[in-house]
Length: 293
Image: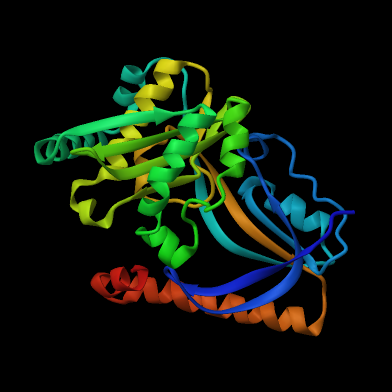
């Protein structure tokens, strides 16, 4: 039996959480291997109020609903889980990206190089990862991922250092005139690198340092030749679409024990999500951008 934890179910608009309801749930995060598997994910026995299954392949949705027909099911999100296949060399990979993406990346790199002296440094050993963390953490604190989402680099570097001791992490920093302006941290699981943390100094936002750093990191990954896939993880966005070569249609599925309170909660979440979706289609685009800030 897997122990449940008190997990937040958020009512959000863009990056803003209006309020939160908590339930004791077992969180099941599907890996990229799970998303690509032919069989649906196997959920552990649960002693809580249900499950929150993230990044579950949409093609398995009916099978999981049927297996848990007594539960109240709600799809919270639908998205493409994107990844890059790392076979071949960087030149072939880059040529496989869209022409618009290739042009945009070249233009961004040229613009940044014209503004400052650029250097990209990679990190992998324990000493190197410790140095990376010391330089990247202050930068992470400036990012919206940290300020709004609580998704910046962890203050405690122990997991990163443990992974480095087992050669299970790669990280990069982008420097402009000797000053770090962007970071990328990718833990490794087997032959898959995982897109864990990417951030940049907001002062350099007009120069797209995150995209420039990602492109340079991909060059280094292909040159090393150890890894088979780069997993862009849950969610979607322009950055992931630019660099991915493949995608799996996925959902975040909430399964709750039947009961009046849970039925009311699901009804409230359903209604709220529909209103947000309607608002995104109807409100002016500049107002939508403000909601994300």
